[in-house]
Length: 129
Length: 298
Image (cartoon, rainbow over all chains, first blue to last red; front, side, top):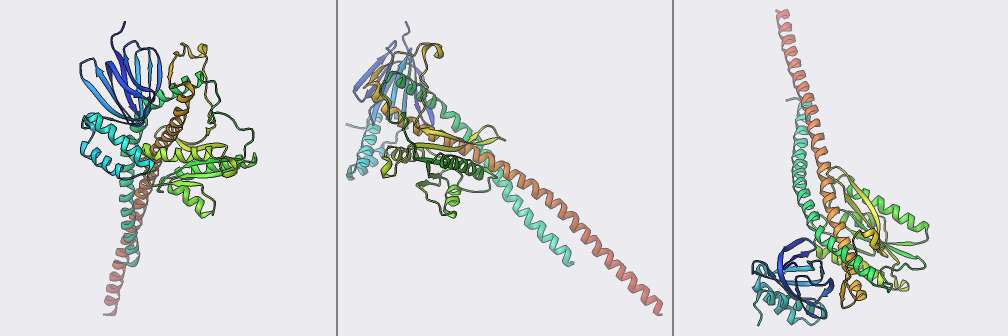
């Protein structure tokens, strides 16, 4: 039995991350889902503005904010597809904070979605309490 | 300096200035094609994964989705045309426009009213000049489109598809863009975006068994959320391919313009040399004639 799985995090314009991982935690519309090697095939919708965590074989943690996408698992190949995805390391915390401030001051649906995305970015970067 | 020579020198100067511009545009376009091609290549993993997921969800969902079901009557169709923002790209925009005109007349023959959704300033000005109605238009990004642009276009198209016919909605969506074959060949293509034709592969055709996915929340819901993403991705791909085609067409047009300028400079230089020589010959013959006259007058 395999102990690791091939994971790729893909956004429309590029492949953001790919590699071998031992476990993944992501949030679907139904709730949190944890995936280990040899998981059964799953196709799940990721919830808007959520955080995905990938534990690599090397013991590193890859954290990313994902907005609008899905997760597919089949034969130890996991694909995280997101319309927008950002790795924690690439997130500019000050800018995300500013975006959250701005979005919270507005009241429409668009701003609510923007606030959700900004929160996810901050969560992923570990700057949200 | 004689009048003739001065005219030639002036023309040579102006052709040289034009050549500098076309040469610069050629170089810029060449470097951008490479980038555009890289962007097309970088978008492939997403497309592949999305197509696989959509066909898996479609083969597991039994309910007919509004985006995949064919209407009984066709009354109105959206034609989304992708052209360039700027000219000087040879026949790039006009070829795409011609393809769209073909689609329009084909639709009219079938008693379907075409509605224009335009991307790029060239297409917009073509419609405005002819006083035609434009349903929606976007411009300013055709040489470097972003996913956000594709989403705006797809959202507008989907909205019009989901609107009832009586309120101005459409039954079909066609997309006209330019396929990037290679550096020298780019072909305008038209394809129907909606209603979608999903190939549900059986086990035998597929080679391997389709994995028995566990859908969260359910196959129909997953399909519901995937299809708009799929449409957006098709538009995004069309934008990327069109951008690559635009740069390739511009590079070729500018290359032939530079070559022509070179040729013109050569011809004009020959003419200028001839004019200069004629001037010298005339001067000499005048001097000799003058000297002769003086000598015979003594």
